[in-house]
Each structure stands twice: as structure tokens, then as C-alpha cells.
Image (cartoon, rainbow, N blue to C red; front, side, top):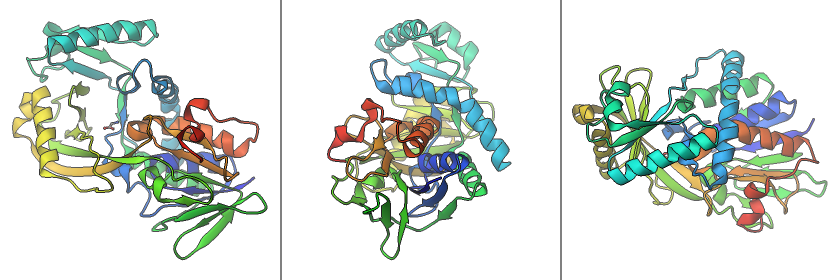
Length: 368
Ligand code: GLY
């Protein structure tokens, strides 16, 4: 079995490390900080392919495939790591606040039914039966029962633990600067002070992938897009489903708090939180659920989503460095797509006859 270096221990890299270690590969997972400390830390764990993946986007089909893997993925992770992982398939209620928005959601429910997805149009008069605390201003909603959310910190920790249990070595504060091809076809991965050789390498460093120099290749064109997230102290039982609105979403966390996300900001590598972000998210939250007006903010987090020029992930083999596989650019869907990404990467690393999906091919983004 090959030796593989996975660069980046966010939800995507950790899930890949686990998958490869379970398949028997000798895995080394390197993270510039510690696993889960990048964008993963600020994720609300949304599993919502039929909201975030538009009908014409390949994300819809990729999201559907990955969501189908989730139940089994979580069962195995819980078993292997003996840890609890927050995982709720409670459904989403997407709420329209205008008549035009309501018409769009009603049309979307028809499109989803034709795709075979259970999606119920909820007229305004029925919304209080489903979610009594949603604003009376709602003009209607779309209920998609199979959607949900996952606790990404616990998921990532469990994936790392499962990888380690299969012999993976995890190295923290190990920021990779460069990757190059070795004459024997393997790869060398170097930091400021060290270097390692392996048969293969997976670049899963999210937004930071653009800063890792691959000899002979273009930088990965991923842009960091900041997302700020609030945790609100709220009366227990305020919501039973994820509430999605035109400007953000609310997640009923099992401890009774509500997560309110998320901003979408192009501010470079600034991982700070802002007063404006807090204000906009509170405004969004209260517009959807007026009872949150006096909720206190117990935590604010921010993370950098890695966005590729066409908003699709970059998953596939390098044409420049044989042995290098890219798994980055997941933008808003890293958590949802983690199990599918891990499967695709396992095939690409362990089966030379496996091919890159054209729609995810790194070469669409330059000389990669
Ligand atoms: N997928 C949720 C977000 O990007 O905010």
C-alpha cells in the first residue's frame, strides 16, 4: 500500500486521511495549525444540497450523492471513534419574505418533486403549525425533510481519531510551503524546516492551497471567502428545523442555542469577526424569528471558505506532479461533500485506472 501525505486537516482533509488509512495506506496528515482549526471551526455543518446546489449546477448531483453517504458515514465514525457526533436530519424550512420569493419557492418544490426529492410547499397559513416562532411576515415556505446539519468539530475530531487508530500520523503546526515531483515518480512535501517523501500527496488545505507552491504548476486559484457565524442563547425548543431565509440561516443546536450564519465576504485572509457582521446576522435572525430579538450572542466565529472561479470543487490528479491529487475549493459545501470527496480521492490515489470527473478536473483552473 502506498504512503500518502494529506496536506490540511479540515473536515475534508481529515475525512480523506481516515478513508485512506482505512483502505490500508500509510498516511501522514499535516496541518498548519491543528486539525479543524481553519474554516471547519466556523462551520454550522449545513447539509442542504437542494438549497445550495441550484438545479443547473453539478453541485446538486454531487450534494445528493454525498448526502446519501452521510447516515452510514456517521454510524461508522461514531463506532470507530467511540465519540458522539451531533447529526440531525431535521429538515429545512426555507422561508419567503416576499410574494416573489414565495412564487420561486413554490416553483422550486415542483422542480424537486420531478427530481424525486420530497419537498413540500408550505402556505403562509400553515407555517405556524410547523414552526410557530417563524415570523408572521412569511409568505410561504419550502420544507425539505431530508436536509439537516452535523457538528463539524466533533466529526473532524472523530475522523482524525479513526485515521490515527489505523496508523495515521498527525502533525500539527506543520505548514506546508511546497510540493515537488521526485525522479522516481513520488512526491516531496516541504515545510520551512522539514521535508517528507511519499508515493502520493493530497492537497486539501482549503483557502491556503493557493499559497502552497507546486513546482511547475500554477497556484490553485481559490479565493478565501469569509463567513461569520453567531451562536445565540435562545429559549430551548424555539425551533425544530433549520430555518433558511434570503439573507442567511438559523440552526437549532441540540444544546438549545441557535447558530446564525453566515456572512459572505471577500476580505482576503482576514479571519477576524466584525461588528458589522454581528449586526447583519442579528438582523437576519430577527427577520426570520422575531423572538431572537433579545437573544444574547454567546460566541462569534469566522472562517474562510475556499472558492474556485466557477464555485465548484477542484478534485483530481495533477498533470504536473504525478502522485499529487487536489481536493480543495469546496467553497460552501465542504462539510456536505466530505464523504464523497474522500471516496473520489481514495480511488484516485489507490486505483491508477480511476479517472477524474471532468466537472471537477483541476486543469479547468489552469496548469495544475
Ligand atoms: N454552507 C453554509 C455556508 O457556506 O455558509
